[in-house]
Length: 143
Image 1: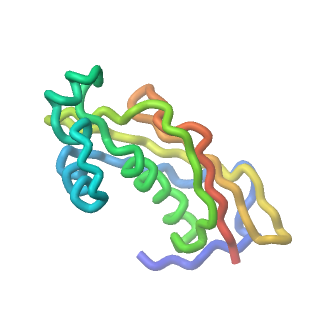
Image 2: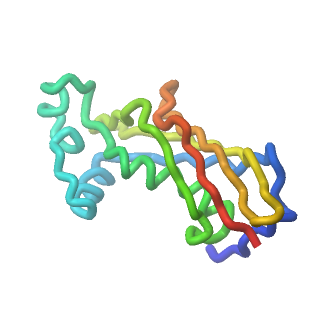
């Protein structure tokens, strides 16, 4: 879907972005393993993951981070408008074989600078009752 890029006049502090639901399956993890070359067995081998103390296979942190930022790129209309993005990984996304995992992302505009035409967005990513990313913020350039 091609959307127009947001103008600074269309954005205000406290504005909520449309929420994003992300379903993560084992198939997604295998595909990401091939694309990223991150072949750590905790991301695809259940027996290995549990042997090192994890509850099950977990999603790659960078896969989670990359999926979560879609809430901002969809909202702003152009992924190239994201000029900063950072987070801390607070909890792993556990991905059971049969059901996969669901991450729900919400975001709110925390600051708008009319002079630089930049907005700062704070993101929250939850998997069940676990907050999986902390201090997640993105800065976007607006029209």
